[in-house]
Image (cartoon, rainbow, N blue to C red; front, side, top):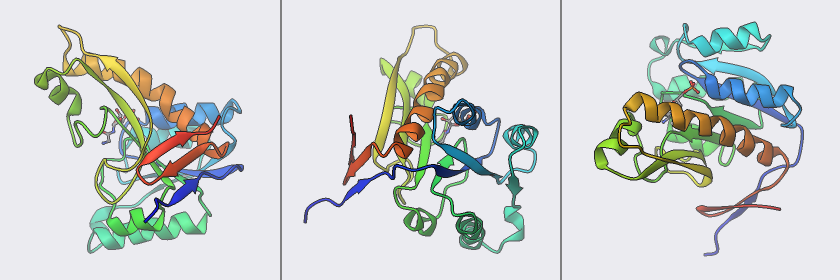
Length: 212
Ligand code: GAR
């Protein structure tokens, strides 16, 4: 069977950001939105952590924020169903995971196919999961980097949109490598979101092509 082809919509987009921590990637996307580089607005910033610094920054920037306490839901399915309801209610076009450290349920991923992006601090499909900068150093790979990809039910495995490589230096620590990778994350994530709403992202099965 031929691969299904998806083309991102050229439109003024409605974005929801999901974060669990400091939110520097969300900030860079919001900066690009404010600068007019991305034709979109951030409609909601959601977190599973009430005290996430990124949530506070979003509030300070005048954005709508929402925290839901997962302990008040019987299971992950119910929790994600509530987020899906909030997403639909606001007619969100694109969900940007920006350091959201909770794995989305397969039903969430399926409900928003090609409409959820994630940034990961490694060159996927190498080093999925956590503490990947340290793992890259320990493996002795010469390059790591970061990946923006669409989110699919399999963790860290959806179609790859953009990547940036970062060399690993002899004296690198987890902190130093993470800091250099983060600089690249801050470039490629806003870029991927910009391309999305310019209608330039074309997905053929697993492969992504950027339209000129
Ligand atoms: C970023 O390095 C991002 O790539 C990583 O968490 C950090 C969040 O930083 N995400 C993952 O590891 C997801 N698997 P931020 O809150 O400053 O954007």
